[in-house]
Length: 393
Image (cartoon, rainbow, N blue to C red; front, top):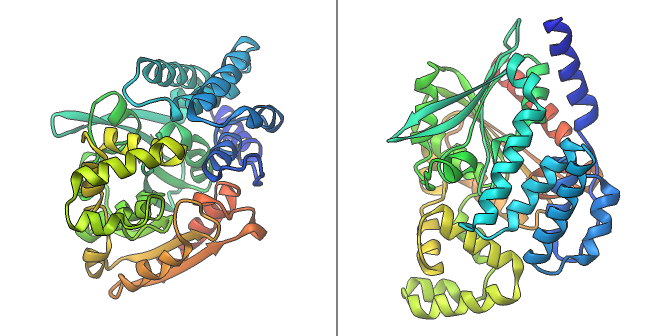
């Protein structure tokens, strides 16, 4: 019976949860992306999302409308949808607020109750000591042959619970998966108070040591597209690295979204002017306000200037020559966060990799948005195909 349940859960995940498509739902690029994210990775209903989109102009509107959808779904016992709606309501709620904590904990409680059979039978939940706190980890191993072992982490605003369909899909392809929330991410930040570090080799090495892993593929998404290469430069047990997102330098990506001339002021360390300038921009641009507020919280700093200063360390170009593994770089040509031309900087920073493969997804793939959320299954197929080819060379 356990084997039947195992098979049916995996089959259901691949067929039912790997949605495909991108939709124009909002004029603001970030709201539009996050609405698509709610559908593609959050189990949201397209008709319901479409109905609330015109009511959203601010992050406060977003929280109100997503909370409404979550409450309605929960009241009608549509728990899978409620989980995603509450998670995305929490997304734009102010960091540090009681309501953000309530939404996070409620979404998480619903998630593990709803998926209880998965975590009883297939995926093991664990925690690994990190410094004087703990990182949450999932372990998913196929019952038979293991074609590869991958370690996965997200980026600037990720929660590993969002990755459940990804983990199950990889498991169905006979890939063993270790996924964790690192410093500044998900439960590590929200529950253990572990703030971001650019020295990503520290949490990755902790995971590899805890489970005695060797010969692994490391996959990082979004900001993880910078963090995973950084870890690979210092950890030779990583044999293959996947940058699922073009991220040579987080500081430079941020500077594309805020006022021109800021770089000059940063070089001059004009802290007062910079804070005033960014705070003015935050009042009129919800993406900038969210990004700066979340960044200050996750990196444990008090001002926009201090946040920007800290992001300068989040780069892989200065250590790119130390990366010697097989390297897969995945980009999207309409990524609203990351300028597409940054791909060249990543490639130029990798003179000593064993091999380099690069793919740019487009609207023809339904994968033109950030991290190609419109067609996750296509990306996963490409990653697995690349892994197996790299291992067989």
